[in-house]
Length: 412
Ligand SMILES: [Zn+2]
Picture 1 (spheres, helix red, strand yellow):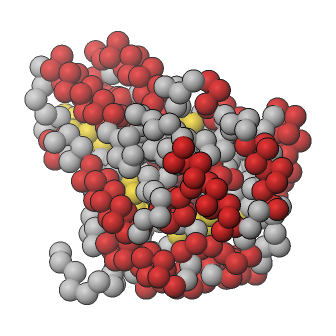
Picture 2 (picture 1 turned 90 degrees about the vertical axis):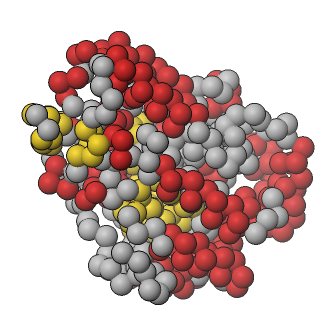
């Protein structure tokens, strides 16, 4: 189906009821990140592939949990503390210049490559080829990655860093609505006064909200005692305002501590981002499980990085990366700040991105909570093949589609 105009007139994306992972002590069950669970192959193959599956779990973990980094690089750098002590005294423009200079001085990392790192995608593909070969198969059914036969996924997210950003939200939301998108907005819950009436208005229009920690002061993951003190406060405020998703401020993170939080999903990791204060990346352009949470890594370069650190026009890199992820059937997850992109030329750039995404006809447009709910359901589904007829059982299976592996762009 071709689009005659750039505005999509289809109905909003079909909703999967988000698992209302409460912030209560009973936590949702997480799933597995091994290759068999990723591909969702016929269930009765599992026993025959036992060794391959066990090995794939360790290899996937190496990428997904950034285990290729030294342990001290999987936490906020200690030098950041000196920066945060004086951050509020430095005007934003000077701060951007200093950060940009610091990025240029930083030793270039070979891995993960930026903006596209295919190591994990290559691994999934190789594992499949070797496993099919071991089973003397050339092709097979699997459970499609996305519901309703969709071939890729688009998730739009924003972090709102200041009252200025907040004042620009409705305009950005209007723009997204014109292209029939809805997005998610993450708010720091103890940094500035939040206009909860505005939040409610946007919720009524189908937008979603998450917790962007408490403040961009570098404290949350600084030390065990800071975390122990601040986490209950964060959880309480998130519960009060019905926020089920989390993204760490400045993406400063400790994976093992994030899993102690009671959110439904987390968005603090990237697939590849060497430009954040804590560089790294999961190499994944698909969701995965972070203990009981679903991890939704942002997979598109941040506007802040492109504009303020690299001094590049965002659209060129956005267009290339979005196309790459779409060609793999993965999840395009944007992180754009209304503070930087909410007006003027940069808002035009963002509109250009929306136009491009609007042309991806077979992409599932979803909110983070919907992707999380889907990924949990898909993990629990079971595929059975009798003769040439696949059938899928489990929660949400009415929206799941069995597809031949050879029809998946990821396999090609
Ligand atoms: Zn932020």
